[in-house]
Figure 1 (cartoon, rainbow over the protein chains, first blue to last red):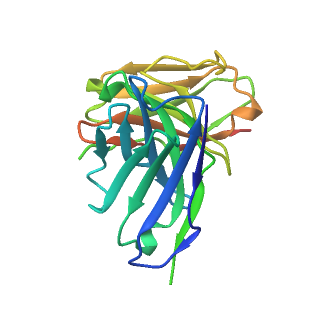
Figure 2 (cartoon, rainbow over the protein chains, first blue to last red):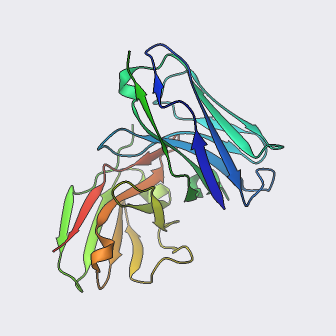
Length: 122
Length: 106
C-alpha cells in the first residue's frame, strides 16, 4: 500500500487549497477501508481533518473550518481534500493515510503518504 | 472538548525501558493508538486498539490502558527508537492526537 499527496506548495490567504491523494495497493470500495487527511504545522502536533469511508460516508473535524470537503474518485484511486479561505495558520505538512475502520472508535491509520508542505502567504 | 495529555519529553538509556503516558477524560471509552515520527518523516503506527502491534513493529513496543490513561512502553530501547511519539484516540466527535512526547536515547 502506498499513498502520495500532491498539490500547491504555496497558496495565498483567502484562496482555496486542493490536495490530491493518489493511492495504490488497496481499493476504497472494500469494506471497512477509509482514507483520512491530517496536517501538522511546523514543530507542532498532528491534527486530523477528514475521513472518507468505503461506502462514501464522510466525517470532518468540527474543530476545523467549515469549508472542508473530502471526495473520492474510485476509478482513479484518488481522494481529494479542498479547504476554502486559507489562512497563514493553515501552513503545515498535509498527509493522507489509509485507514482500517472496523468501527469509528477503532480506526487506525496504518499507511501514510510522505506529506506535502503547504505554505499560506501573500 | 476532549484533550490528550502527554509528557513533553522522556529520556532513556540504551537497553532500558521507556514509558510514555497519555491521559484523557474519554480515553477509557475509546481505543488508543500510538504513532512514532522521526524528523522529516511521516508517522508510523506502532500500537493500535490499545495494545495491538502492526506487522513489522518490534515486540519491544507494547501498549496498555488503565482507566483514562494509555501507556506506550518501549522495552530494551535502542538508538533507533529516538523520535516523537503521539497518542491518538476518538473522542466521540473527532480523532484527536496528544501533543507528542520526544523520546531521547542518551
